[in-house]
Amino acid sequence: GGEASTLSIWDLATPTPRIKAELTSAAPACYALAISPDSKVCFSCCSDGNIAVWDLHNQTLVRQFQGHTDGASCIDISPDGTKLWTGGLDNTVRSWDLREGRQLQQHDFTSQIFSLGFCPTGEWLAVGMESSNVEVLHVNKPDKYQLHLHESCVLSLKFASAGKWFVSTGKDNLLNAWRTPYGASIFQSKESSSVLSCDIS
Image 1: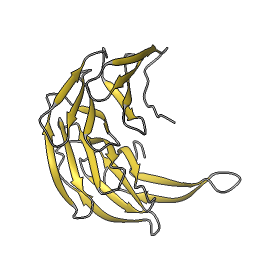
Image 2: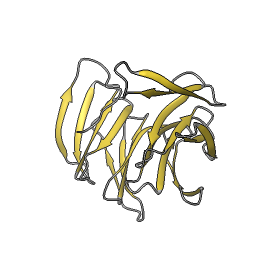
Image 3: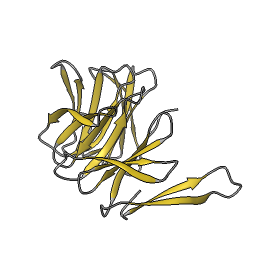
Image 4: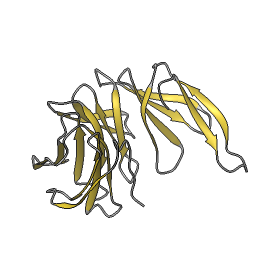
């Protein structure tokens, strides 16, 4: 994905990686991608607010989730592959039922959403915002925690596989590791430039 209307599928099994196929989207840009746990479907967050659902085997568009009124900026999938979470530049986070193809929940914020992560335990969602805040909310209860160690927008967020902690990174050059859900600081690292993305092995 990127600032173009095409998504590239790469074949990494060949000695020299090559583009296997290209998917053409109606939106001018793709802000984020996710692949289903069974590797059959790709979800692309589009600059027009839609979430495009692609069949990777047939390389066809099979569905679009519509709801965000501005660009869809970030995405995560539940470990069982039944629920999708998306954040948008319309200050909302939405959850979607992938089996029924409908929106389940909407959470409204006071800032644009730049990153999010769904906890593998299935209870918590962490949201990184343009305002520099990180919020951790329970998906079924009103419980919510606000975390304030970033000094600029929060660009990426990732939970550890067991769900006991997560990492956020920002335009402020900071990487923060937090306890789930209340956000006690585990460690902080100051990098030499903005940290655009992260992952946990």
